Length: 304
Image (cartoon, rainbow, N blue to C red; front, side, top):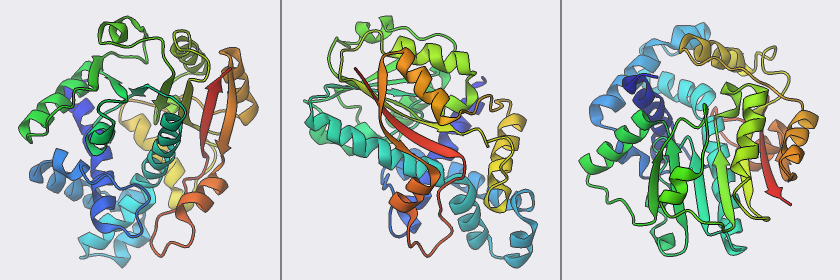
């Protein structure tokens, strides 16, 4: 992973959240701080590249909205870029807020990127310790950006540089104050890029040092990932873009296999959201292009 590639991935994700917060109604997930982490030049460059790429996504839309870059950007963002990242963030943070009521003291964010949960919830500064884990290049970029835009790093936010997709260890977390207390873990947008053995091993390691009642929210692709085209070929496009970007999607799972991986690590599925449930929860009766992504599921699992 190169530093600029690492930064670009997190920036594009933040761009999708910022766009939704500024322009979409009703809000699925309001990340009102995301826009502050993107420079005007970065925002302009991402917008320009997306609009110029409309031929790849949909030639009919390119023809229909030729000369209307704002509508093209809206279409690409709402159809391809944002649906999964918005809904899974909304679901994850809703579960987390509920878990805090039941005694969660620590929040571990794997693949945090430009996550802003800690900045959006200053009221939790004295009650929840937050550990952001990400590739060292991505994390270095984020810390530098927070300084540049004069956003104070809260005392309960701890940065842990680690390529957890290669090897995960709690040693660095313990060095930053992590303890054997009820913990909530998020693993969003990661499982697709791991082999089945890698995902199983990671979950096993994640729950080896946390007590009963600790839990995880993650998303995964079902067994139709590599055959489903999706609305306007968006699933197929997602798989193609990942391969071209040098991080090919490796895994998809039937529900029974996910259940087995979790049970192996002593976890039980508390809640499972299929694409149709996600549609009903987060996208029902919308008047824009936003809709639940085909083949993508969310899981909340708890350690016995």
